[in-house]
Image 1 (cartoon, one colour):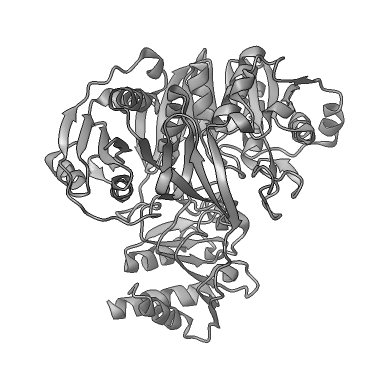
Image 2: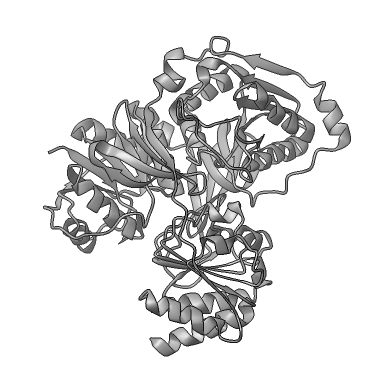
Length: 259
Length: 317
């Protein structure tokens, strides 16, 4: 089975994240770049499926040169090879532009299964997997907490507000995963060493068959008008429980008319 | 006045509050047209939509629409976008409706904005990003604005609309019938309000200590008519089901009141609750970052404080 796992480098959520004042895009230099956490679960699921059914796992990312760190992480976990979409023309692409670029790259690579994390910690739109299914014309099996692959078929448990839906489809398909699905492995020393020798193909806009009029900040379908740091919350009242903490909290709730 | 399509969220015919919030918002942007999908439509549902300003109600209540993941609803909305030429499409910023919005944007060559907390003149949308750290104003610049609005972000105001009903037969394409829902498994916990809809949310974290002990969180929630949430530490430990997880990789909630018990307040959690109007924190560690957000905090053992709070609330109500 030919599995492509899409990964994204995001600013570390433990550091202060910013937008750039010049073009209002994510400031990638302000914070350390790390692999988006849910992408690790996507990589793990791809590896588990490969271990069970055979085949090959290709990592696909789109991002600047430094996103190669994220590729290496996925390769160190055990993926076989990688494709890095890297081109200044891609900078500032919105979800529509990104989904066009990724879909073109996926068509070029070829796949039985595409796996993604269900959302990234930076933009948090949670729409990319659905958009890829739309653009590629394949079944959408998103927010999966369990994936089972049969002969040319796939079944997932899709998380819902009330529990989950059991969803069936034929391959090829697009799957996105939530963190309940598995426990991502840590790269071993051997894995880290091996990753250095694994092939990484760099593709630009033209190489991947991407329509340049569909990507980049200037061609986005939306724009940031302006932005500002959120005003800090006013300092609250903190009390130490001396046997009456619950009663004091109830008084506070009463003063705010919640009880 | 142009129509503004509002995708109705309902659970087996019961309309969710966010739909009424969207209709209230839509009235400022044009003539609201509610779009009903799947079984459960009733005279009662029609009345509720009309009372909140729906001028038209498009009804597509065949099972075809809900038997397959997301795509049939995109077919329906794309068909209505083409026939009604609306000024905008509003959906709730739930996981599924955002996916519908995303696919509709691709289908109609339009822009999409997600997790919007307000809409200003000229369809400029307010967004709160980076876990509530930055406020952004954004707008769609190409095609039709498709906007996913967070539940609880805007008020509900009643205002009568005509509520003219129009049955829509949607041609669900074969391509949209590829991911079939074969079973719906309900893991609901009691009759509490839904997490993203609730005016009050009571969440428990690592400090709760066990699945059994979540009962003290549930008792407090029930005394306030609140939903129960859980931090990632608690759902990872298996103490509470995953769909109740609040945070970066779970649900984002903006209730009037959020009570965090035994939750330290790491960014993972804060990203999901920072926009709550009032925050109360109970934690035994005075250094816990949750206290930086709290309007009222109690440093103490939640096993003492939470039951006492529940008891005091019972006395007052």
